[in-house]
Length: 187
Ligand SMILES: Nc1ncnc2c1ncn2[C@@H]1O[C@H](COP(=O)(O)OP(=O)(O)OP(=O)(O)O)[C@@H](O)[C@H]1O
Ligand SMILES: Cc1cn([C@H]2C[C@H](O)[C@@H](COP(=O)(O)O)O2)c(=O)[nH]c1=O
Image (tube, rainbow, N blue to C red):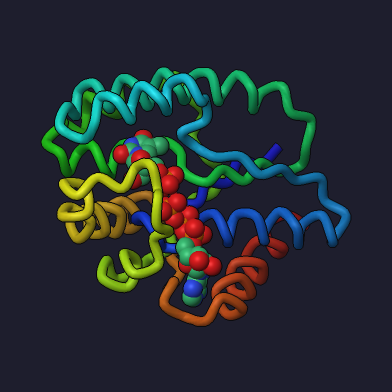
């Protein structure tokens, strides 16, 4: 089973892209499933109540949520799991909040590393204009950090060989470039 994570700042198009990848893989006869983080309703509710000012609590809450998510993923009998956010979301967002990257990696060290990370790279001003109204995680203090989060993602992408996709392109172009790469890897 392939574990593919879709990463990027808020509003970069992850959910739309992840769901379309699943649809196109299924069209090609592959058994694929969409999932997302945060995964559990309970921990999502706690994160909402904690807010965006306690990065230690956020790191641990996202990791607890991930443990439950990983157990669920291990039960899936599919060719590919496409997850809308995973470990690199914690590394990017919580390190920018001041948490030591080594500690974040330690806390997440028991979780499987993704086979492929796709980074949807987008300017935060454009991304912010795409964020849906009523997004439960749309904390103003987080919006201010998105430029730094983007740069952290780009740093990780260079170090860990992510597939970087320019998310400013029309959607068809974005998805076609991903599928071109993916189908070559999967078949
Ligand atoms: N390449 C694109 N060009 C223009 N609009 C796009 C593109 N990709 C996605 N969108 C639109 O941008 C909006 C945000 O997309 P989406 O919800 O998939 O982003 P996201 O990264 O999952 O956001 P969040 O992190 O806030 O959950 C949606 O209305 C979607 O249709
Ligand atoms: C998994 C994870 C998420 N976050 C942040 C990133 C986003 O701002 C929200 C999730 O909302 P979305 O609509 O799914 O984009 O939470 C984070 O800071 N750390 C994480 O590990």
